[in-house]
Length: 207
Image 1: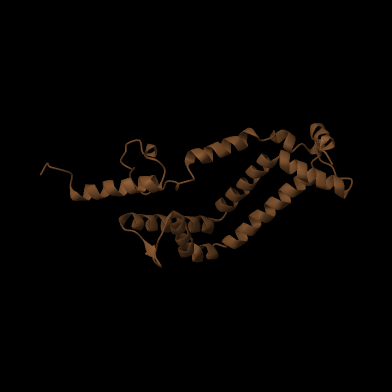
Image 2: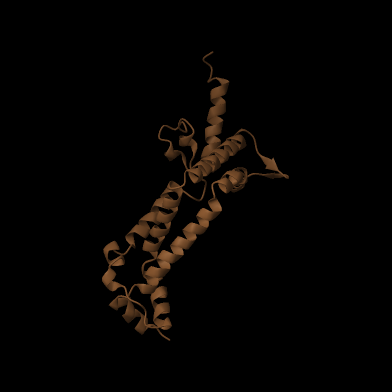
């Protein structure tokens, strides 16, 4: 019959409309069909849009101090006393916070890439979340009388994939990233001399 689309297609349209409510707006799908395959359906949840992430990265990128000056060995020296050490740490963290942010992100990326098991654990987490979310589109998932929202689904996916993260040594990886970040940033902030303009700002600040 030509009176309408087959029943199966109606189900797919309803699923896409529901996905549009929970995830990024329909502009992410130029064809309006919601994309094809698994990867095309993994959009960011509400409140964490791609434009917001891009805007945040752009702001960070614009506020980065030149890397050549950041690592200039001629501008490193041992602080003369504890007071100068505290001054350097506080001011350098304020001045180079964007540089430090990208160092932190780089360490995270290195840790993930250098650990195949961690990559597998992340893939298991993404797969578990995708399956749970698809189930929630077909019918509401209710646990203890409450419907599972997207954050709840992400938490449930984390619980399901927890054994894989444990086998991958995710805890050790987190401590390694935090330790390496504190060491790199702390060392730079403590031994990097303040610029003349920064010293003038410190002198002008009211006591």
